[in-house]
Image (tube, rainbow, N blue to C red; front, side):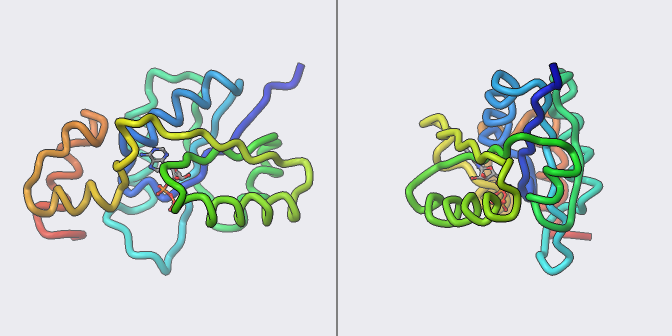
Length: 165
Ligand code: ADP
């Protein structure tokens, strides 16, 4: 049987424990999960695409089903190229819903074979976002409970040291 592949696209600037929880849960549902960093040159990010991919690889080292990739076009096309059957997205609050719902409808129009699977966040990760992590780190706050231990130092060094070099 062909392995069932899902794409988990996002900015991951940086990857948080909320993202990691979605990755772990997606691994239970699919044979292969491609965590794909969206490359958008117009968007200012704290970490480069290469850095974010490297962080994701370090954080998913123990998950053999995970592959880390990047793309700069449409999720629907990237999914088709990788023969993915689904796009995985996490939902934190109602405020995520409208945007995510629109994206799901758009992707369905562009690639009718592609399903979007929404995973509801765990209550303890509900308020975790990459931007909140960066704000806390900027003021020297403790981000231990928000990001995987293996990237904590990276985040602190980059953000607390005064933003992107
Ligand atoms: P994007 O820029 O595409 O929103 P993000 O890196 O912010 O990328 O998020 C990627 C995906 O992970 C989105 O579906 C987002 O809703 C989800 N996500 C982010 N943080 C959490 C969290 N704490 N719990 C569950 N899902 C999350």
